[in-house]
Image (cartoon, rainbow, N blue to C red; front, top):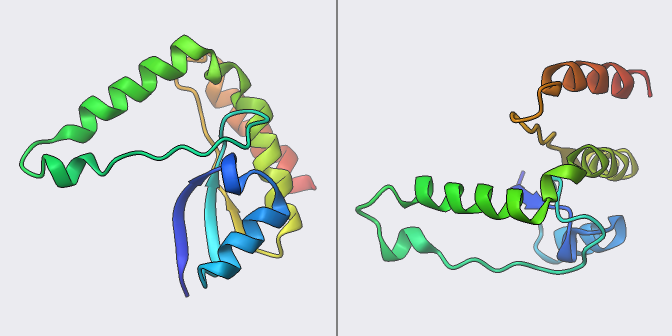
Length: 124
């Protein structure tokens, strides 16, 4: 079994049909799908920084930059909506889309939201 272990619900992974098409084209069985930029078909290409700087722990710095950009653009405000969207996609996919739930640890209610969401999703 081949699993794409990390993709975001935007770009070619924005809607159900395009996700399944990409999986089929790449002979991939499943994808672990994270929330992406809301209502965006835009794809993001990132350079393989680790190949250019293999001796350094560059991912800490990259994650800090991503966190800063996320905060500045307000992307974190849409996490709940995007989590719900990824859940809907996963329910349509016969197991090919595995939902990854994105939690914002800066949200004071993040744990109660997570517990409530798990309860609601288990009921549906």
